[in-house]
Length: 329
Image 1 (cartoon, rainbow, N blue to C red):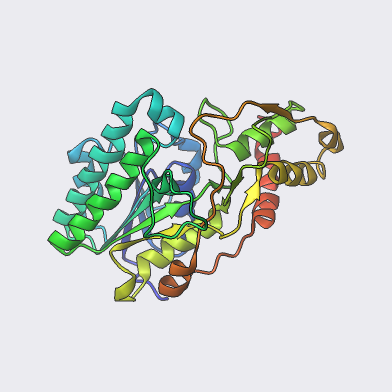
Image 2 (cartoon, rainbow, N blue to C red):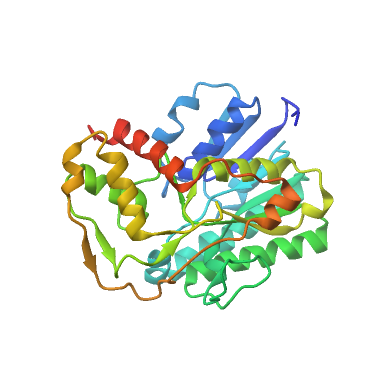
């Protein structure tokens, strides 16, 4: 797919884990990239290497501020909306801020994009939208009731995008991310995701805590598969592929017990002592869904999605990155 080198992409949350990887990818492809971030959960170090690049513009602003949104979409062809307050526990602790950012901020970005005549609005949706639905694999048109304030906000995003598509003729695509992991995912903080958190603990010879017996499973998805999905969603010429949502996953599930085994295997290549670090089992966490597995048939069929990285391949890459970047941190 050829791109017009003058085309400009806005990546909201561009200093975050997923956003900064998208910035890297599209700058390498010759696009002009605008990053909008308030650094609430993103880091300046993630985009530091782009700051002297004339193809990159950083706007330090907040999606809750409509003026910032309007400034960011000026002259932009595509929006990849990644800005959000993630984490189910954080949303339970502070539902109001989660709603302000994830719903109010989302609506600001949609409205600003509509008014600026943006070609297409691709946004980060979430597998949390499946809620209490027990059916496996998860298929896009069968969801349950949301189980957290965070899940509600991400479902509301889908509803707003659908209404804007029908009412204003906007092209929108939502990507329901499933347990994304990889380089630059923050291992620190109260709401750290399980993979970087466990990696850091193993590197420090600390015992990670698994909630429950370790048989709960997730569809862990490497960052490069997510980047691929964003590009396909942004550039697809298939009219049938528009104004809908897609599971963004590998399409396989891994138990926490298996995950820990893989991490120990790959990390012990750098430090043999990690092999003997014990794992602690704690109580099952309230509200945790036992199993998550995505059907990626819709994305394969309509977007020609073909994820390159399995859980093992992705973990090997991620562990190498963490070892290089965290060992002296």
